[in-house]
Image (cartoon, rainbow, N blue to C red; front, side, top):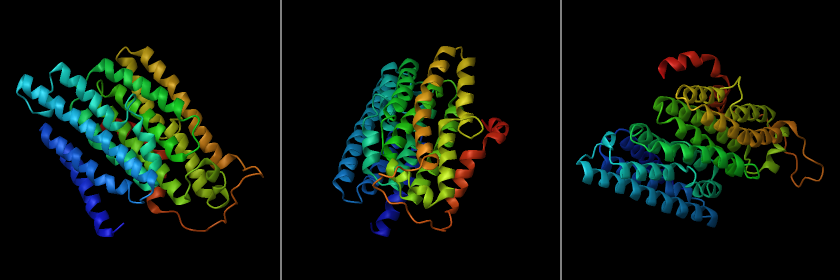
Length: 346
C-alpha cells in the first residue's frame, strides 16, 4: 500500500476515535464511528486476496447496520425527550436498541458471527487494530451510557459471550480465529461489569488491549498463522516462544500474571452486588478459554512436533526482539504486584 495512503487512513482512525470519545452529541459520536469504519476498510482489503475483500465487505455491512441502529436509538430518544446528549439516554426502547447496536459494533454474542471471519481474512497487524483500537470507541460509548443500558440484556449477552467465546475457540487451528474468540470471551467480562463499575470495565479493557497487542506482535514477529507452524518456532525464536507462553497464560487469567487482576476484581464486584451465582457461572465459563490458551501455550513451547510434520524446522536466528514487543510482553506478565496502585486510580 502507498505510504501516503496508509498515513491518511491511520490519521483518520485516530481522528474518528478522538471525535467519538470526546463528543457529547449523538450525531458527532456517530460521525466519529463512521470515519473509523471507512478508514479501516482499505487496511483490511489491502492484500487484494478474495478472503480479505470478503472480510472487508462483511465488516462494512455489520458496522453500517450497527451505526444505523445507534442513530435510530438516539433519534428515538431525542423524539421522546428532546435530548441529544449522550448521557441523557432515558427512553427504554432507545436503551434496548443502543445496547444491541454497541454489542454488534464490539462483536458480543449473538452479534459475534462477523468477527472471527473478518479477523481470519485480515493480516495480523490489521487484526491487532480490529481487536484493540477499533473496540475503543464503542467501549467509550458503553462507558458514557452505562447508567442507561439494559441490565438483563447485557448480562445475558455477557454470559453467552464468555460461554461461546470459550467453546467455539476449542476446535480452532488458526491463531487469528483463536484470538477472535478470545476477544469475544473477554468482552463478556467487560459487558457484565459495565453497569455496576464502569471504571473497572475500562481497566479490564486496557489490560486486555495490552495483552492482546503483545500476543499479536509476537505472532507477527514469528510469522505464525497456524498451530502447526507455531509448533516449529521454538527452534527459530526460543525466547519469543517462552514469552508467548507466559503472555497467553496471562490472557487466560492465571494468578501470578497481569490477566488475573481484572477477573479477580470483577468477581469481587459482582459478589458485592449480591450476584454470586452470576460470578460463579462466569468464572466457570472462563475455564473453557483457559483450555485453548493452554493448548496454544503447549504448542508454542512444550510440545515437540511429530516426525510426520509437513513443516521443516526453521533456522535459529539471533535477531533482536522488537522493543515494543518486549515492553508489552513484560507489562502483560508482571503488573499484578502493583495492583494496589492501579486500584487507587480506579
